[in-house]
Image 1: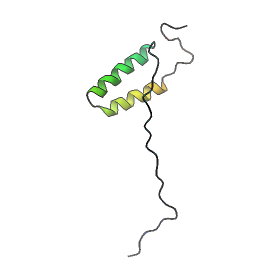
Image 2 (image 1 turned 45 degrees about the vertical axis):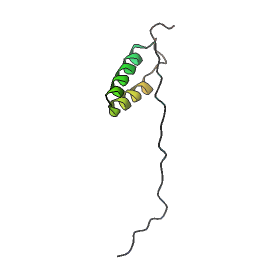
Image 3 (image 1 turned 180 degrees about the vertical axis):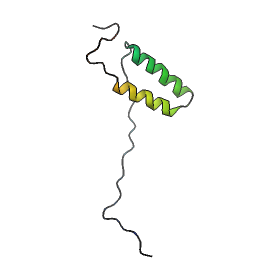
Image 4 (image 1 turned 60 degrees about the horizontal axis):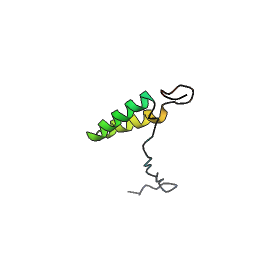
Length: 70
């Protein structure tokens, strides 16, 4: 049997270890997500931690008023 060959070497993708998003401590949504993420970390629920991080990264602060700020 003839060995399979490929035209180019395989691509190695880097492992991204981004720091956790900071969010805004004066924002109620961010504060809630911080708490939810912390609880998920405590119980070892990496999937939920990741979900919270995505929500924090995508939560908009431009164009809306954050509680306690003007």
